Image (cartoon, rainbow, N blue to C red; front, side, top):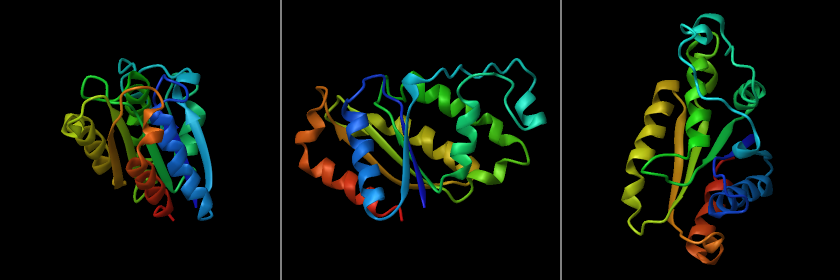
Length: 183
């Protein structure tokens, strides 16, 4: 089993990364091969859409950036852990650009390659009412439905200060259980 963790937070060592790390630790503990990518360390340009659906016609994106090698990592993974803080009721800009570039999966040779993959959403937010993450959850769910991937689980956590989630035993235990259940 291969699990790919994708951290969409620009804050190194913040709540998002801490929770993604805990999910990955649990997955590794049950025998999965895990890898973590930090989007803020990569150059991923936003979808340009003015290319007349080049990726949909050719099967790959014509933008030459760090997203190109990530396509194979996504295809080779059995499960994805998407971690993003909730910014203005949606994902971070880094995660949004990453997901927008999934448009290349619309090509007939790729559309099936995400089918059945387990996907976990990790989303810390400052608000105490986690329903503020509903637009983000809906966006992820709709994207996964289109690709026929499985929305395996989500962890929405109210967490303000950087690193504060470490003190939230309930959230950390839930993250570990989510990772254990990926196998």
